[in-house]
Length: 350
Image (cartoon, rainbow, N blue to C red):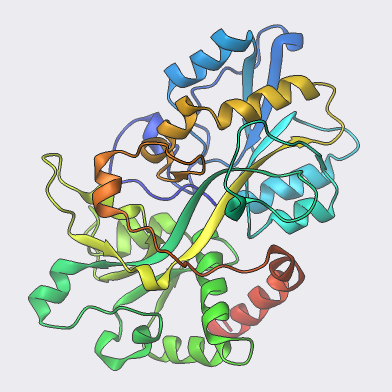
């Protein structure tokens, strides 16, 4: 996954949360003693508060050398290319849409976390991936638009092909966007192998707009965000509405549609071949610690996997947690992902 979105907030810390922005890091650059350093490879959207990271250093004596690697796909590709000369000790940010590739490339060491995590988040098979957080990719709507226009709010994926919603939806390219890929998988899961291409043909004919990434879709084209774009339906996250809530606790002008959600789970793992395996394990346990799990919602707009972790009030009130989000076996994703994306590209981009 990549971390979801942010409302328009300034500063490196929150810019780092946007899915396509890189280069902001509050973690040490590795200038300390290499023997006391653990190298953390992540996607570009990784961010944790400075005081949380300081707690890890104080507790363990280890310094985190943070090295962003691009998006989740680039993260896995980089691990594969550097298999014989590993470039890090721990990797964070491989999600269930790319996890099978990492497992197949044999770039991770087995590791069984001491901190218990519910079985529903576990990656099947040998424990080389430790779940850290999750989020649901869902349609988000601008509720004010539908109230003002007197149009019923959509509730399902199928509604998007209804002529009432012509030219109202913006989605991301699954070849260049993590939520875009999750949305494509949701349509395949719901419409079936024999029906998803017809669904996308109808979506195309109903005026869907395809953009490269989440930032363009949500902050520019979507009418419910600070960008105030022209389209009131967007692919985003179940955790997006809390970012739009008023500072006084006022309800957000947006809503995530729970019947359209596809679950993404983000994992951490120990990089195969590291000479720093003990320190790598300590970092994984830290990512499951109360300090990190409680910081995840407001730092990266994802949800903690450790049960009974308290959530900020805005998430409790405005982020739906569907009982049965759509999902897909990671092995099936791995076997078909590239072909599905190629078919989608031919259909939608020509």
